[in-house]
Figure 1: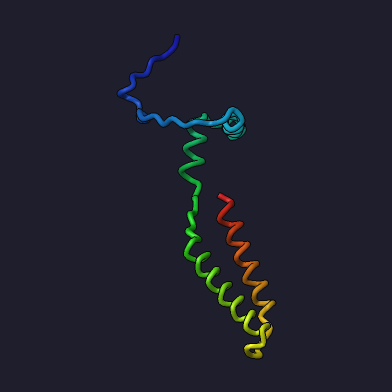
Figure 2: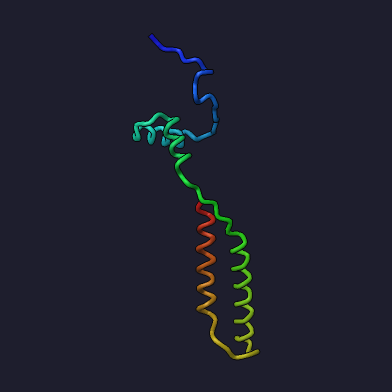
Length: 109
């Protein structure tokens, strides 16, 4: 005989609806079975115990662009003979690597 549970006596009386592809749903279901958890338990544990860090890289990217522009202007003046100074090509290359790394981080969402 099947037992009936009254909705008003349930602790979890709220629903949350999300849209998934069939592949996403299958993957989540497989993981919940592998963890020996119900789908609800698996999603709750996954979402409530997983920290998601949100990083706003935009101000840093703007500043790096400004630094890069300044380095390019200095290099142009040195190359045109306006004054003699240190070769900044290595510094420009390093700045470009930093910029690319930050772009990669921001795209990994």
